[in-house]
Image (tube, helix red, strand yellow):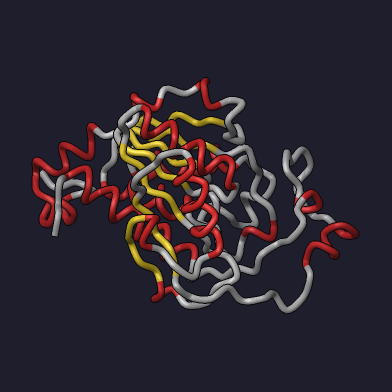
Length: 253
């Protein structure tokens, strides 16, 4: 019988779709990268999601985040993302975690329950902890490196963290993971040199903040705010989704 995933089944097969329906994927960070990753995974037939983010949709998110519209400004990102997932697949199970993942609360989550972990956060401390927890649980993980201050979506590559170059975030991650004995990590990263923003948005945020009321982490708390577009982080998110789907099914070519 035809269903919303019939076209995917033509390429992934019945067995592949069954594996996806039984998979539980945890996505940390529902922003420019993570929102597109979740959307693509939902449209691919993943059956269970755990989505993590403590932030609310801000007006400045509209330029790049799938869940951000005038209608959703002020709503929690995980709530908006859950609604979208269930509109795509009413049979999906969606566990929302309205929190900012850090080492202090990492023990609250059992990584062995996840089929796959997606790191789409932008805090180095959180990224390292995600990798450590996933490795301890023997759970597959893919991590996104820097997608801000870039304009060329064709420069993204999928590789091991120790084969990366150019990306400043990847450089920091290589160093930190090496000191912790992590031997490998699949990442999506760009070789495009980081561009300097034309102006300092952090200054305007300090004097004219438009973060939604009740937002946990306002832009005024950040030292620098990267420039972004609709077509760079989204591509990174879709690449990640593709890797997750192929790995779950077992496609190697």
